[in-house]
Length: 168
Image 1 (cartoon, rainbow, N blue to C red):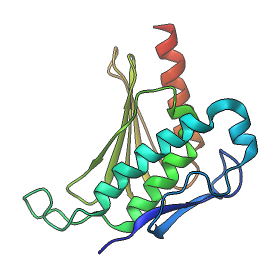
Image 2: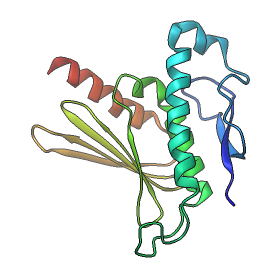
Image 3: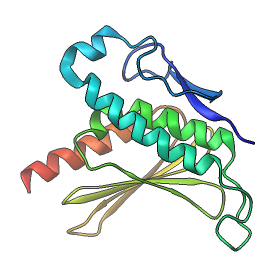
Image 4: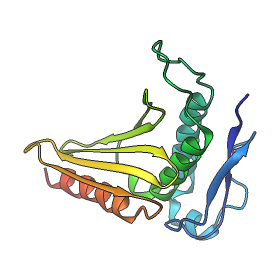
């Protein structure tokens, strides 16, 4: 049986010093930083992170062949790294609809945000292996990049979706 996710807090909202590990509890209150909560986003953040972790837990229990065609189970390191990515970008992501978090038949996890003007897709195929696509829905122009553990470019892409949605 696979493990559920626990958040080990540390560092600041945009640092990569927080991490998820295999365990049995998701605790949004344990060790929460007062600087994050003081800005009034604490409850929204907790609700968002709980929704994300609930969805990741669903992926964590998928067994081999979950798609009916022999797809591999989603490995715990891929789930954990997806959680790390999502925790790193939660503040920007709050301004957009909840992302679709989808298992892929190759064992990766796709996370998609869609605004009125853009679609941002991340494909996490394992730790330090994230492929990102940002599509302008009007022009169908796609920006593409890869990242490892520096999620600043993903945060910037989310901010671009928010900014351009506000203009449209």
